[in-house]
Image: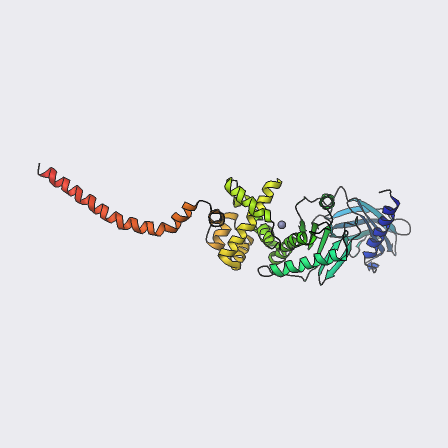
Length: 407
Ligand SMILES: [Zn+2]
């Protein structure tokens, strides 16, 4: 970090952040005026808020108030006001983290010498991961950001986003009234590091569906387009599902959300089929009932969970159609538990859907399938056979009776 070029870069980024704050921040709101409000972000480390608070009569006390736009907790910090009204407060963003690329809103509150307390208008800024020299390319409300790779890299990412949304539009409503921002890290370590600094757990990719923010790791390489066409549509599906379902998104089972997202990957992972085959042979498939709240944390089982969900949701869509999938998301959205949501939407409990999928997709328990298909015939045959048997027994019993009587 002491490298002089890095230092120059840091200064530039700070200026950029400062420039991104609305310029007309001078607001008079009942007694106080906030001028020159600026924010300097050192991602994962600190956020420095600066402003000048002006008032007609002397200031007694002032506070800075701020929170993430989707947070319910508001942070309140007392600030020292210099004689010219300047205030500066540095927040330790490594201790109390904000998610990367999330909007933060702040305002000032001041008590004047007349004992009255006044509040300034709120100002919003983006807590961007500014450790990288992001470049960007946009089409409508979809913007891709990257820092490794050339212009073609950005264009490929934008194409992958477009192709992904076109493919998923067959069964997910695409909503682009709100922006979507896709950040492409050049390696997994950078992305993991960002998520860690933002207090979030690592997963293959990462989406904050509420914010319309997608984070993926793709290195510039000959396979970049395949990787983008796999990862970007997957993460975008989460955003679009959230936009379609709203607060009902959070009550969906993990297997359903991940199954849909994995299904829209334009290059399905060829290893999924193999993982399924091996798990099926070894009898180590995961029960979908266990994939309702979350996926396994160990890498091997997590991979299997994605493979299974992709295959399972494809099976459901093939069997019950897109409308069946829709009924499923609305049943779970209405709060049905995992097992019964499937009964409500498709007339079959989850555990039974699970065994039907194992049978028809993975060819398990073939005699069971045959028996179920033959069941009506077996019943019919029993009826046909049982009646004569009862008849035969009856005749036999009567003969015996007669024989006893004649003794
Ligand atoms: Zn996912």
